[in-house]
Amino acid sequence: YTSLIEVFRTLPGIDHVATYGADYYRNYFRGWRTAYSLSYVFLVDGVLFNDLYFNYDLGTIALPLSNVERIEIIYGPSSVVYGANAANGVVNIVTRSDRSQDGSSTNIQVSAEKASLDATMPEIHTIDANYFYKEGDLRFSLSARMEYGDYANALPNNRYEWSHDKYHTSRE
Image 1 (cartoon, rainbow, N blue to C red):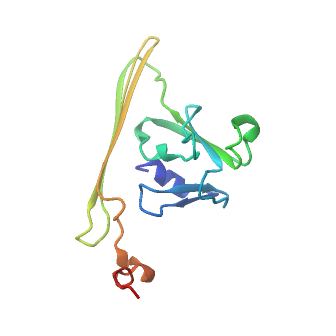
Image 2: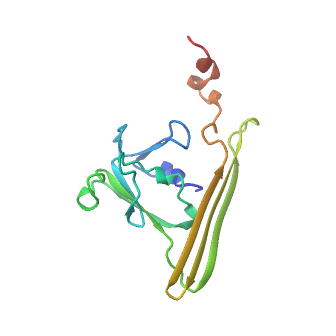
Image 3: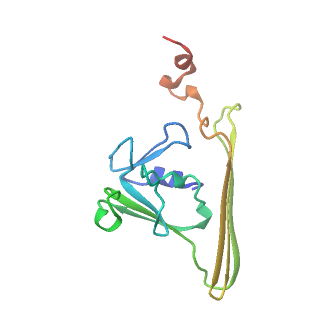
């Protein structure tokens, strides 16, 4: 995987909808769709990461995968433990917090992909990096993620019949 969005796309019981490309997306648990709020809680190391007003999980775009140790998913109602917004489930991202020995380690993931076979479509570049240092009781971790490319226009309009340019340009 190169991003958490790709992880959500492959999870069973979760519908991932990217209406306007990678910048605007929604993850829906078990078919519960609403325009205003999500029905699950998104946590990073047990800390609530959802938007406070709409309960959106917009942080999944920028979270570096190079620092993720594991992803914990609870399917089903969890409101008793996690609050009212956890009606359909909980996603907890657990980041790396320790190593077995002192010293430093680096995890870097670099990817470049052609958005389509069409030569006019842009390439998408991703750099995802994590630096971790441990000495005795001291722990230091620094993570970063950079994306370059046009994710919103990664697919050509003519891929499906209903998305042909002729329908978008004609007033009829």
